[in-house]
Length: 564
Image (cartoon, rainbow, N blue to C red; front, side, top):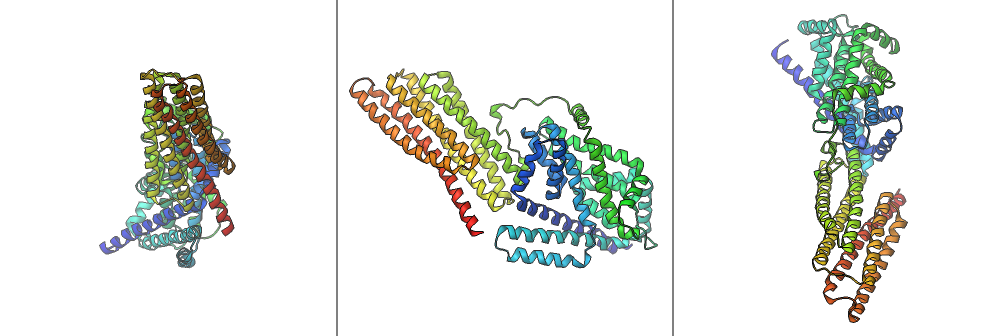
């Protein structure tokens, strides 16, 4: 082979691989956008049992077209404490089955229709007005690109099939399975996608040997490389677990243990396994059916391996607990977000789920902060006053971190219109939460003035303030329940509550003036009294903002339904 031919072959292979990976990533992104909320529903069944976890892992991976993406997502959930270790491992087992879908697609012989698929996808995307239609078009277009990449690689590999040096190398790989495993592992570590390296394997194995009937490598030579591909794909998970919790590291290690042990078992029975694959696959000349045989081998390996490990899930948990020892240190309150994970930004559905959990956690802390402020103010407790200051600073920092995380999600460009709208609403919610936090801190400062000035409210004044605190606390609880459930009726109640709060504040101020005239309240306490009421009223305003957002969202959904 001349230098020019070698140059053409190498860059043709790399170019075809680049088109394939680009198409696969585009298809994965478009499928995620199209699946959207259904993905969250699938993720919701992960809490059921190991069998459901395997099923969910397989379904999610079939949608994402990448076991690495599912594994990274699961590691993020484990690290955030949203998923337990046995549950996460069951999803990983399913992910290994789901990733075989790509190889099955690649085994179809649709050479005559590739450019038609690309053109149809482009036309749908180009002419489509709605985002969902455009996503469908892009998915079809990306699906066509997968096969363009495969055809390109197949075309440049034909000269290799006749190269004596390459034939000799393939004979060594076929006769020494360990070399095939190392080759497959190395290829996948470099490319970071087992689907891509298996597609290369399918394309190369489809090249005819000298007799024109046999594959240049044969099924027994392809299986070790396939096993190596499965080992190599675990590297992504191990890299994603760096800096994560112990359980996240254990999840990644479980992925490695699953594939390494499976490969170790299958490497001893390659001839028997090959005969089984030939039996369940279509019949015909080896060169014509080997692509499907490799796809079936990939599926069978992962399915059988899952059947072996699923009943032994507790043992697998013990193995990874032994490999990754120790316990995670309890996360301190001041250490930042409890759920947000930078690794998840590439998975919008999962990232949004983490944002919901973070907001839920911070809102619960905000409700506790208001209760502390009430105790601090009414009981003149200086210790709680210091706690409120520290907690206020922590929550303010968290609000900023959530906003930054959401901004990064928006900048990533992977959000659908629906997710973008929900993300915008979450940003508004976080903004109102930050305002409520600021008002709580303001009341704590007023509490400091009250404590230092040794002010004592009359019994009537103290009761009025306590009633206002309780009323605002109830409004805050209603606001969060209404937001979580999208409860328009509860949002309507909050709007009515705001009018009642305004009247309460006005009445309290009038009563305070009356008490001053009767000398039952001192004039110097007016600032403390009215300042506290003003801040409670502003907390009520923020609750009203949240309610208005819920009502507006409901109205927008009604308009969309009518348009459909």
